[in-house]
Image 1 (cartoon, rainbow, N blue to C red):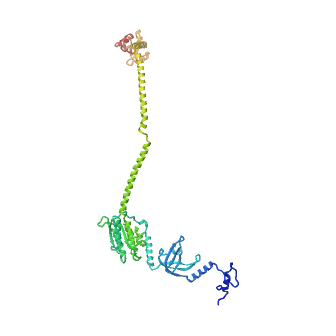
Image 2 (image 1 turned 135 degrees about the horizontal axis):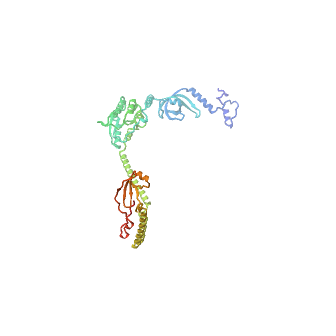
Image 3 (image 1 turned 90 degrees about the vertical axis):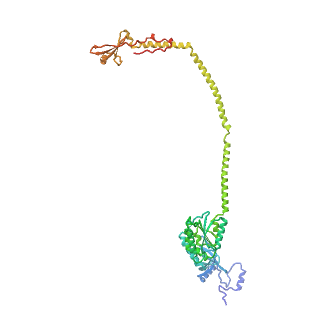
Length: 486
């Protein structure tokens, strides 16, 4: 029989009496203490953690989410139940793969509760892929290794040619992939295609794929086999195991080392291989790879026509706008009459002024000629000639009065240095000169001063000097002769 005073047993009478109370009050014989919600939650937390300290759960990831703090939240589910899971930041950094929704995993951790939501959850310490977990772990390890070597760097990607003349295709020679590629190329832009058939699955397939990529890269330009401008590595969809040949290191290194641009079209859109990372461009499907490789010929022609039309319109618009600007500027220019009208008026004014100026100049010249003609009358000229003759006679008389030889007619002589013509005024100068010339009225005599003795030599008499009476008369019309000075 249970103890009526224990914490876990309450009589029906006591419960019935408590149902009608509005405020909680102590009841006689009731020693059950009221717990808070938090106390109950933490009791449950301790009980769950003590009972399930370490568990391993297999389930499918759902609602994967990584928050800003670095912690990760998700739910593990199967066909019967769902349990929340959390991975703390430190444990999430040690995961060997990137969890995604829908991936089946085996999670190892401890079971606990979250009092804030009254839910139980698993705190995951380690998580691995279930089934193909080892294969996927190997894939992630190889991806990290090749990525560390720079095989997946975006800087190493080569741009694709806009319109390749030759396209090389590495794929199965009998599958539907090559037919889809050829059909798509034929529809869009017919191009020369070289197919290198290989095994795309099974033993030895990876080596054949790598050899085909290296073989296309080894073709020399200008040889019997044209060198491709673009290479497509393609395969249809399949499981991870079916597509594993394109994850092999030998294939990835061959694709990354190829000097020809490569498009990887392996599997469906949701399938991803390491070949996709190493290629210059990833296509979701082989058909999409053919669409990416070449443009649509009709669209290309339409684009060229559009560019031609746009160029023509631009050129025409440029000419039209130039014509409009020219017309606008021409409207601002003055008309011919506006430009030439003032010039014509000034020319007319100048012509009229020139006529008046010529008439005035002719009148002034005629008056000057009349005045000059009056001065040229014979009587006026005779008066001017008489006045000039009188002035000439006065000048001649003055010259005669200043002639030093005029006193010679009174018996005097003039002594000069012989040959020099310098007149001597003293006896000392005559003795110093030695050779003298004596000028008389009727001639000149050379003499030598020698101790008082004189030696005289006769010289011819010079021509007679003109007198004022011998000057030509003004009536004869000859010009008067100028006197000679001695």
